[in-house]
Image (cartoon, rainbow, N blue to C red; front, top):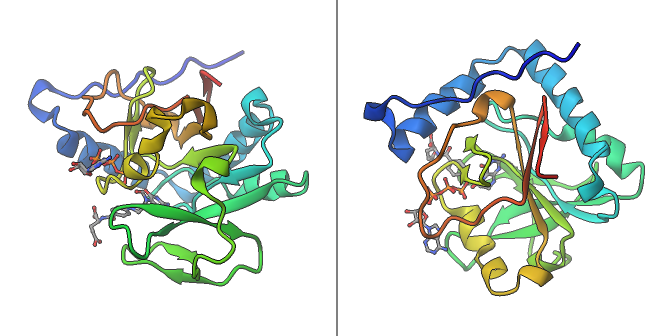
Length: 208
Ligand SMILES: Nc1nc2c(c(=O)[nH]1)N(C=O)[C@@H](CNc1ccc(C(=O)N[C@@H](CCC(=O)O)C(=O)O)cc1)CN2
Ligand SMILES: Nc1ncnc2c1ncn2[C@@H]1O[C@H](COP(=O)(O)OP(=O)(O)OP(=O)(O)O)[C@@H](O)[C@H]1O
């Protein structure tokens, strides 16, 4: 029997700003136990491996889990064996608030960025242009079923993928990864928000 999904988060009217929703949902995801995190990561891997949206993807942007984010590592290990090449975001050396994507495998040297998240040591050499990725699997703090995404508040993903507005046909599929408990009834939308094409959680695939 399929268990019903948890009800989406519905902020109280007095805690409905992006800042307050972010705070509540970061606390939620950080409160998951190691056991819950492991189960979620493995369920996520199965759903991603079964997702038609990723069948033909060969170059995929990914992230290293931080702050209670759902961990894509088991998926990365499985998909690599099928020949997928992964890329990690690196804070851009010159373009403030932007990221570039550097190749990532088991031997890639990493160093912490200014937020303490490990990223590849990268001099721009063998990066892949962002538009040439087939898909980008994005971390997020909250999501809704309209494609709304709430991130950590730096605007990094929104700036980096702003170009998809101009060239939607030459753009990677943007897929958010999350715990089901990060779903929100409806996120407030900002003009700079780049909508997600789909979301995959430990419990469900939405729009992919
Ligand atoms: N795993 C992962 N990697 C990622 C992101 C992410 O959300 N998750 N990013 C997605 O954009 C970029 C980094 N963006 C971030 C923005 C703010 C904070 C953050 O923790 N801010 C602290 C306070 C600032 C500080 O420590 O200097 C905080 O809010 O508590 C972290 C990452 C690139 N890499
Ligand atoms: N394309 C853009 N150009 C200029 N500023 C932007 C752009 N996108 C976002 N910003 C700025 O970045 C700040 C943070 O945006 P927002 O709260 O949407 O980030 P986020 O989506 O939560 O974070 P992230 O994408 O890093 O996970 C906002 O103050 C916004 O003004």
